[in-house]
Image (cartoon, rainbow, N blue to C red; front, side, top):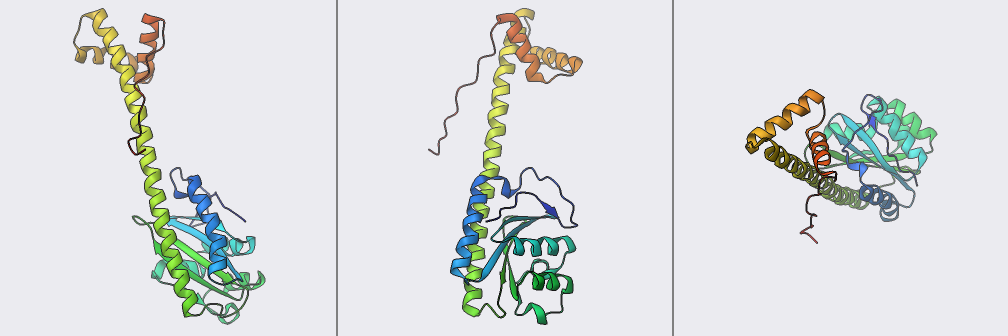
Length: 249
């Protein structure tokens, strides 16, 4: 089983994408399981590649064989092949026989050399402008009848729904982490403001102004200045904020 964690942009450049769907472990495990399940449920001789297009970036996120993966990488690099056509046309694209198909000569030659005789690319919409592409390669021509194509299309929709849920959960986890960090910083800053107010007999607004000015002059984060003030006066680290309780549990 091959799992791909790197990214391939549409023009072939490799780049980082900090908050992409494939960064979550649950998504990677799900896609790995999908590759095996799709082979068993559609056609035994089928190889599977799953990719996600998000804006101008396409990521190959899971595959069941190195040969199929190589074909899809080449297709993405050259913006050709059934997966690219499925993306642009917004519909299922079937290649009944690779040897008789003249639409994408470069991709067809590579697929033929890899031993594949037919292929199908199935797009499925994710949240926003993102799109999942489920691409199946077969070692035999005319591998998919109507029933198999219907099953594969339904499977792509199921996967897209699961990925949308994972994307939403991932974004919410990031928001929660940022909120926790912000509240922790706020608690520390409030403690430092209390020290400044006591020392200077000033208002909270004036204390915050003093803290902000010190931060600017030192070119240091506001929270770091607050920590230094607290530790300098008390000889103790700033008290942590109250622990968060996950209300969903």
